[in-house]
Length: 274
Image (tube, rainbow, N blue to C red; front, side, top):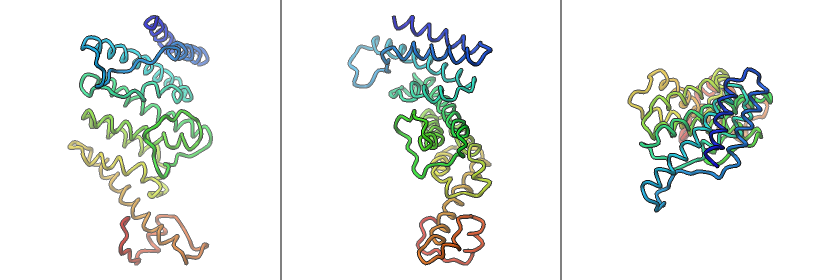
């Protein structure tokens, strides 16, 4: 009986939340995951579904009930710092599409929360490997990423917050967009301090574009991201000159501050970046 299995999974997750011993928490959560994973998926009704209104609503409620249990598991796992489990099961919340922006806004906001949690979990997984977070040159937002390879985790550290940003914008929740930007700022604070602005562009540019659309955006946050993005393109223009053919290898540098001083009189005609 799917309903009894779901009830049992939810009970296990709630018991895990109250458990004091980490090993007990992990065991209870794994048992909850096993209960849900053994069930057939329940998807929200699609536009192509020709069922009657009553059947569609029944299906919608069943899909919402299931995804809420998965969300509970993710949140309890993150509270217990079981980041590998978070990474493993977040897709059960995040990969369900077709939610109605009005009737299912609660699920969309759950997906926002789980994206935030998943992004932070991937950051912790990277740090546990002794790897510093670095945005990939191209961020893949679509697709399922549950592997623990470094490049997948690096991608998810950015894409999770970009996905949350888009979800928040879709339901006109500006706080989501601003929170996503704040997470990116905090997660990559060392790159900001080291003035690695060009490296940050894959993460900062899409967030800045969305911040610009908000009528109530925090001015300091908007200004900070404007500075990061403009400095990023300036940095790219400098790097183009610094790594051009004819430049002696020993004289090449990628340091933003050094390049800014060295190339103060450089003409950048035709530079789209600048």
